[in-house]
Amino acid sequence: MIDVRDLHVVFGQGNQAVYAVRQVSFRVNQGESLGLVGESGSGKSTVLRAICGLVSDWRGVIRIAGEMQERRRTAAFCKRVQMVFQDPYGSLHPRHTVDRLLAEPVAIQRLGNPDQRVREALEAVGLDKSFRFRYPHQLSGGQRQRVAIARALILQPEVLLLDEPTSALDVSVQAEILNLLAQLRRDLGLTYLMVSHSLAVVAHQCERLVVMKNGAMVETLTAAALTGNEPRHPYTQQLLTASLGYNRAVAARLAAED
Image (cartoon, rainbow, N blue to C red; front, side, top):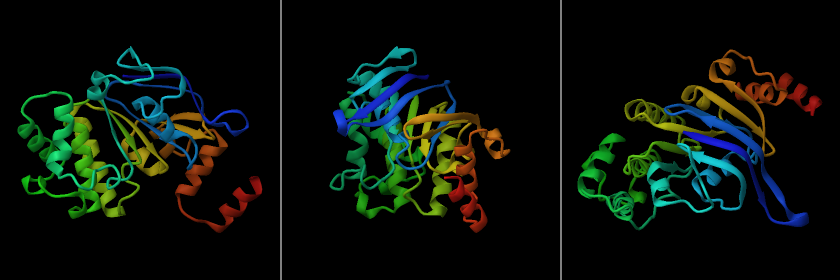
């Protein structure tokens, strides 16, 4: 469903050039969930933005369901591939009601039955009709992210690009959203490409993961290998150790290695 080959993204020119993504290649099969993990600045979110068309200055090959993607994305691409962003408040227009936020992509794609589609999208993410005419500021963080997911689902896409979809939420709400995403994937047969800095989140949500550092891939492994403490690359081992919580002896050892 997703095929990325030798993806490069450079911001700026000459001495000011920043190589955000360097020769990244991976594939995601239909119905599979793949995670991109790494520390901040590793290039994982830039990969998602290149795939969805928010970053236009890239080199390499991007195919979705076998179709080569050019710099500009088509309406058909936008119907097939949708993205859920990290900040649910920043991704929703503050002066638009939930009804308008959900109805807008339906109108852009010139689809019928907007009223029914809005109701079904809200039901799919666990929100009843009372939320339909509220504004984003009248919703909690978890409710706003549910609306953002509903907006992505309303076009009935095949692929969801998930950019840290739970990192801006409270811990208790994170589990609810992750369980919702897992259920939607099972029920709708969706393909996920998820960016996260949390190995626990990726291990829960994805079958495989790609570890990135400084814009490049350092390791690809299964979630089972991760939870079984089997990563081979030292950087992945450091991420795994860090995810277990602070330990003074381990921190001293990692500092000495650096």
